[in-house]
Length: 561
Image (tube, rainbow, N blue to C red):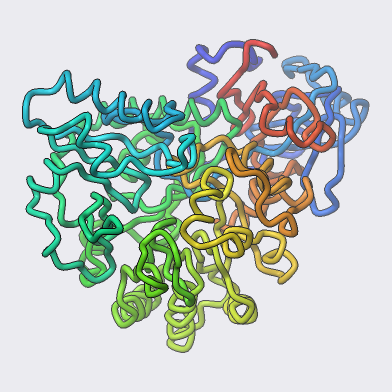
């Protein structure tokens, strides 16, 4: 039966994309689909180009010239004329949480402090007296003209009575006076290890709670969603990601319930995204019991859903990266603030030793150079216990590596999962760490030159998820509001495209399965409106994703196609 190519509403197409493992097609089978007259960037080892591809049973079966591929067509083969448009392998996301949004006050479209406060004020006015008002997390102060957070005194002007919690990324809250009072936080409150309570210059609280200090606040629980509601929301989110060209995502630190829901989507035939899932447990002290209770095994799964390991974290985010050298701003502590260590060294090492003993791959969030020191110390201890070389343990983010880190990273065979945080937050990182460290943030050029395997992603919703912006930033080192940072860390377009395709496949042990357009690999691809290798740099992230295919089936089609 000929597979339809037009119309995402055709349910059978999505079901065919989601039917579990696709085995290599039998020799001589005529293709289900041929795409021809294209500018096909294969991202194979030679970074070669082709005109046409053939797809059979969800895999590429031929890649080459129009003539050589079209001669393979059978009477039922669907042939698609690309009219010269560019095709790249399916794009991949290496560190994803959610696309964004949520029930809190949406600050993502605000561009000034006044607009952010007005959005909060509107929610306060529609809330009962004394009700807690919470924002969602997918915004950053770098998007605001003032380049700063709304702090306690600002929030008090629009919410003198209702407690307000501004959620910023995954590492920070900002509270107004009513919220500080609600949770009993004042100038005498002791700081917790791994946390920071922010203050104004006069020593009074400015409302900031960083990392472990957030534990002082218990947010109202979100309404429980049924399995059906979870699946419906996940389907919608993946469709949103497909429209940006994503065919694979690595969920970085999720709970077992979401993993089970995604497995159920696959069982029902509703899954159109390839998923690698990192589990995170709330208490590393009881990691063995938590894993046993979750009833999971290392690396379980297939090409649709697989476990990629366990996620840990040893320092904060932008405002709490653990550094060898102190911050000067914005804390006013005369050079005594080094960031926060969120997992004590002895606890971290004991945890990775246990995980290694149990056969799990470990991925650890580390922003600052001191945090990377700790990660390498722990990983080396694990390697001495039982070799981890070849198992591709991961450093997540790796913002500020030091020169002495690279030999240690290579010796352990580690992989770096990097994201383009600087694109959004350049001015904020300069404010926190100074220009020199901001310029060095996420040094992809150095990682590549040092022979370190590195992949690319976003950390959505901390930074918006579209992968073309990842390519744009690492090619240009340009930022949304601060100009270019670290121009010496620019990479080529070829290198950037590899970051979000084959390098991500390497991160998840799937480089022989996907990440390039080659015979035998999964037929995941994206059709773009123009040639990503030749358009002016400033147009890279403005390219239109015209079509996304997963396993040879269309999961997104733009009206302009």
